[in-house]
Image 1: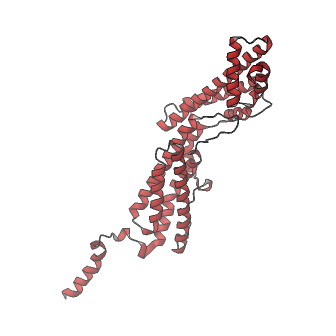
Image 2 (image 1 turned 30 degrees about the horizontal axis):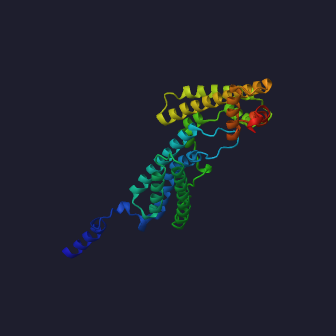
Image 3 (image 1 turned 180 degrees about the vertical axis):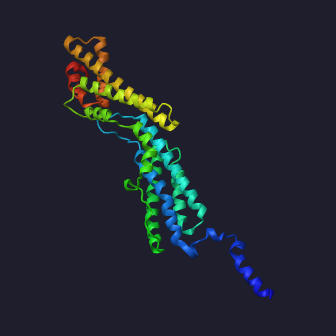
Length: 303
C-alpha cells in the first residue's frame, strides 16, 4: 500500500524537487497563454519606447541656416533615452517573473535596451540606444511568429508610430510640449531659411518665438527635473539665438558704415575680421546671405 502512495508523492514532488515552479514553467501546458499575456504587458512599454525614440538622436549636422547647437535638444535626448530605459526595464522585470522560455529572447532584448539607453549623453551612446531598440523590434517580430505557431491570438506590438497609445501620448506630453516647436517658433524657423525675409523681420520673428518659449518655461518651472531642464534650456537656447541675430545685424551695420567711409580705420579692420570669420563659418540665416558680397565690397584687402 505504501508503494503506490510513494509514487504519487514522487510525481507531485518532482517539478519542485528539481527547483522548478510549476506556475512559472508553462511551456508544456500553455505557451499560448504566455504569449498573449506578454503581448498585453508589452503594449504600453513599446508605446513609450516608440514615442520617445525619435528624440534620442541629436542631429550632428543641422540644416543650413538652423542653429548649429541646440542644448535643449541635448537635454530632451537624455530625458528620452532614460524614459526608454525605464520602460524597457519595467517590461523586462514583468516578463522575467513569468520565467518562461517563450519570452526569453524578449527579456534579453529588453535588458539590452535598458543598458544601452541609460544616461546616453554622447553620440555613440545615442547610436547604441537606437540600435538596441531596432534589435528589440526584430525580436518582437520573431516573437509574433512564435506566438502564432503556439496558437496565440493577436500580435506583439512593434516599435513605431502605430504602437503609440493615448496613454503614451499623455505621458510624453509635458516634454514634447516644452521642447516644441510651438507655432510661433516654427514660423521663426521657417523665416531663418527664407531668402525673402529681411533681417529686421527675422529678428522680430525670433523675439516673438522667444516670448512663446519663455511662457512655456514658466508653465513648467516646477515640473519634474528632466522636464524642467528641457524647458529652461529651451528658453536659454532661444535667448542665445535672438542675441546672436542681433549681434550679426549690428555687425552688418558697422560693415555698411565702413563701406560709406571708404577708410580702413582700426575699427573697420576689426569689423572686417569679424565679418570674414562669420561668413566663413556660415551666416545664421538666409537674411544675412548678402554679407559675403558686402564683405568683399567693404573690405577689398580681405578678399
